[in-house]
Amino acid sequence: MSGRDFFLERYLKLGWKYRPTRPKLAIRINTIRGKRNQIIRRLRSRGVDLERVPFLEDGYWVLKSDFSVGATTEYLTGLYSIQEAAAQIPAGLFSDLEHKSVLDACSAPGGKTVQLANLMRNNGAIIALDIDKRRLRALSNHLERCRVANTIAYQLDARMASQLNLKFDRILLDVPCSGNFTVDAGWFDRRTIKDVKRNAELQREVLTEAQKTLKPDGEIVYSTCSLEPEENELNIDWAIKNLALEPEKINCYGENGLTRIFGKQLDKSVENCRRIWPEQTQGFFVCKLKKREGSNCE
Image 1 (cartoon, rainbow, N blue to C red):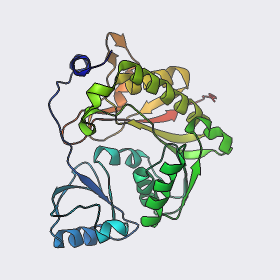
Image 2 (tube, rainbow, N blue to C red):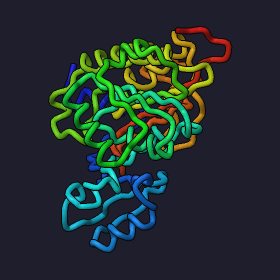
Image 3 (cartoon, one colour):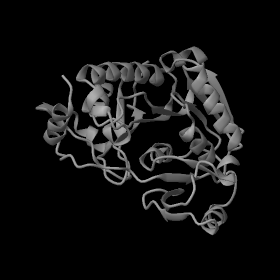
């Protein structure tokens, strides 16, 4: 099953009516490279019209620029990253990051990795994994450009993360997903429900492996840019029942996670997740998980 009508009918059943959406271009200031206000003044002096994203600390929408913001001296020297607004949410949900050990399990091309380093003030340690060598090169270039000094980029499938023989305080799982129509004009023509279910299975494998490497008092942030509940709420409901993980309430942009999907009732705590329907940003889903107290699940 596939096609525009199929997916739009699903979204309607989930409580959202489709409307054409084009997310605003957004950047994030890299505070390990300079002070936020100084970097903003520098960009505005060059004629870049910026508006602060109200639900982000260092995110700004680019309202107007006479040149590509990906080809400026400021960009090339790492003063800011081009990063979609919703994609800037996950890293900011950890309770604290300084001096922590962090696993960025699906890290390339590195926007969230650099953001983690910013929030950590370039201390502690990040292990950034990706399975693809070419993507790892892009990640390494991004880290170097932004002067990130606390990160090791490592080629490894996130489904084998326990082979590192390490335990982490914080784990970011921005898992491979089906994406959505806001950033891919041909999305409806290419995606099928089989793709969605295949990605959901991969995501459960990544979640299963990640929780093995989490310290007892650690935190996992799980995110996708998919709108499909199989990759989002249904996966979290599965993790609650099978991995002894539980969603924590988070305060961020978006709506509560859905707890009834196509007639199926989910665990009530799934509402602690956040679902972001496309509007000013792309579609997105995010959830913060901790091990259930007394759990020995590995």
